[in-house]
Length: 424
Ligand code: GDP
Ligand code: IMO
Ligand code: MG
Image (tube, rainbow, N blue to C red; front, side, top):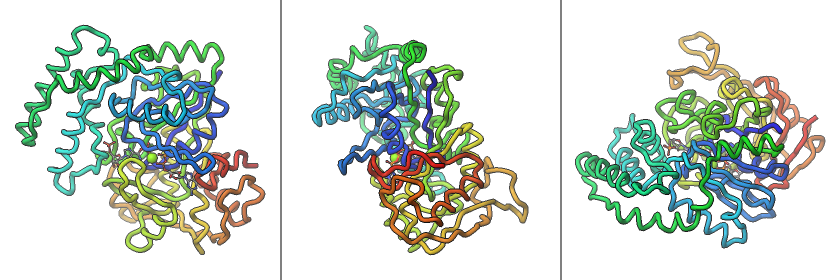
């Protein structure tokens, strides 16, 4: 049975969870493969809103098993709080959850170092992170000093943690003047995590292979987006993982042969949180108008999202890097207020048209726009492609042509039901 990957094509917050929730009804297993609690994934069902950070968005379906893959950086206490809240809302998460033993543990000192680094960074170097400690935890993983979920089950865990804490205390004290943290406090707090999920810790790469062989349907849930990929995004204004298709294999252990479809989630305009170049960004009142219409405030930090027009260069880059087989277009209802809708169709630098989305120097490009007529009718909740106003259909078709991949799902509102599931 093939696996399906859902990946963000822009700078995150494209509406991935809305689409994942919609697809989860036909799925057995949902896997997070990278990132951590920097993600904020929103699902709305019959008007009730759920925001997920570490728990896969499909957990609210009865038949799904949810997997935290080895590529995730897991803050155990944050995770347990999220699970307890879901459990109290009636979802038996602890019965349907598996955590990779190779998944790296994110401790409070990771967040402290992240926040401290952000507060001392000069304006040009500040990343605008979520301050959750993501980059610091991944750095420890690469330095081979990190601790993994499986280490919790070993006798020498406390002494290994102590070693790491000593190193962090030296860094926090010397560089940022932050007082020492105690190993004991962390160990005490981990007891609750252990008591809740010890039985759920397994080799998830092996588990997924077995399940795929047995014909189970697997959905890989990307966090962040292509523009935030540490290799293919707008470095250094990126996250510290690979949200793109390559990262899905590494972060889950699934073999590439299983992956048959890669769905790129794409907002009908563009947003970005934090620092970094954004060619189609709207400044001032224009930006505020789009932010208000789209309710663009971060699901994790509450920060206002920067807003701008749709950028087909960004999308063509995402299509190529991820090998997208189709695109799901979200939030098209937000554009209903506009008379004219500009779309970025190309970039120029020093008077020359660029071949592709550049690896660097994005802040120097000049954007070439094409303008499309608006439809000026509320389309919220429309569930059939034929019911869309003709100008809206033309907009969708034009985007499809410009990005070179089929748009086969359209989201017309935040609720599960506000979805056009098939486009002719
Ligand atoms: P994710 O991180 O990609 O899962 O996206 P977020 O949940 O951070 O942000 C997307 C926001 O847009 C959430 O508040 C969703 O409820 C909302 N949303 C998703 N799809 C649509 C849509 O088609 N129309 C509207 N108006 N809102 C949507
Ligand atoms: P979802 O999964 C939007 C951004 C941060 C910052 C940069 C680095 O909800 O789409 P980090 O804390 O990861 O070191 O921050 O990445 N960022 C996101 N922006 N959506 C996200 O996740 C994001 N996760 C990280 O704002 O610019
Ligand atoms: Mg989000």
